[in-house]
Image (cartoon, rainbow, N blue to C red; front, side, top):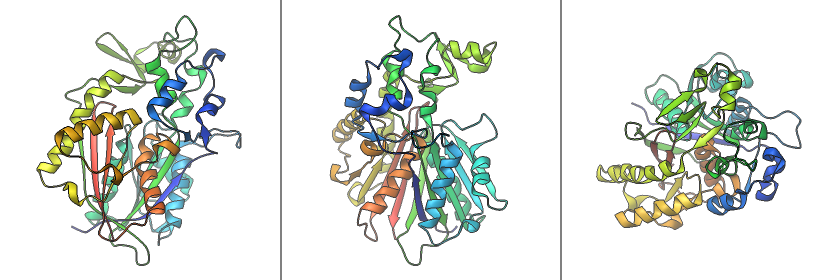
Length: 374
């Protein structure tokens, strides 16, 4: 089996940076009212700026697949290959542009390159590692010499007032509950890409992939974050169970929702997975030089750190790297965008180890990836 290296990194963040005060100028005000929860949510997540795929500088929004293609083109520019060298493409997204076909098909079309092999991964944040692992294994097994993995998300298209107004979730005062409004002021748009090859770059830094591990804990949890369904008691009704798309929308089955009480119960499980990797010798805390940990809100980082310190398994905070506060929570694109900025802004040294962590609240999923700077 061959070694695999990340040889090109690309990120695409649409439009200008949007401040917390400007957010509702982009996503809109439900029933014309400013959100009573915006200030509280921003204090919790501490996000200062973010990007939106629809904006004032462009009449037509960027699509999920278009952003993926733009990030991939940048990754190629930052590598030693050409677009035509890519023979395998894996894409990840939370919600694609269409119900079908998948995002990889549209991204391939947007690139305009000859026929290639593709794979689609659709989940929430950890679908990024699914796509990366797919590309990694293709190269490792010798099926392909050059592969691309992309993550692209456009959640803000579902945060516009029309997705909430006239639905059963609207309260008497015309607002929506905080647990629904929370996502509107947390998630944002963007895309990122890695180029993977079976040999390192000849003239610039590469990242050797040591291993990628993903674990689903869906056997222990109900659905936490969803789109396309609505909970009624102990049951979840899918949008297709309703008599019409309009009826599904009125019931709130089209919007993005998250159960934050359930989310907090997942944090100890994610930490337990991390401790298991330590016990198995896959993670040596003292050898980690950089930690790229995807977390959706600063408050969740604080809760995680408390558990890590209690377990005696804390990686020094000065080794943590995050751009959540300036780029926002871009979902499946987050780990791509984070590593691209780390590589671009930090003086990385040969031999340094980078641990990447991507948890997912959808139905409790957790993933890690260990990289070495070469």
